[in-house]
Image (cartoon, rainbow, N blue to C red; front, side, top):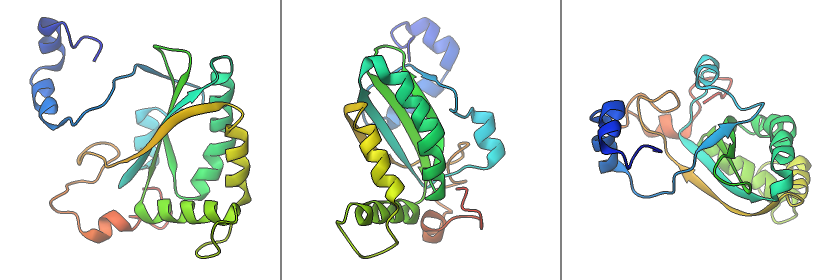
Length: 187
């Protein structure tokens, strides 16, 4: 995306992919990101078999002087907790174009996201329905509040035939989208 204004170079590097991808893009704001320690590579994600039917995409504003400290806490404290709730990290990034943003992406499923939200609500005393409260979720939010000053979390769906996505949207059944593919829940 850095080269998008240089049309000749763009064509040489991206070929026809760019023109096709532009047809499907619905918006967004490009950020160059750098993975921090604990952020898995694409090869590691593929080897682990991590897939998702939805992705939790967090673009967080953090205190500039504490951004790398916060991302270290994500890698060491939040990743194990989120994994217990069927959310597998696919990226822990510092935004390279500024000092105040971090991007974290999780692969998961609709049921796992629902369970996570219910367990979080139970921990805060907002609901007594669904799974048991996971007090770690509440503790994480209190920890994150010391670093995070704003941001947005969005749910996204993956493109079929990608490392993370389903084999094909057309051939996927509703069960493919709502249920884990395997007993370990690594999708």
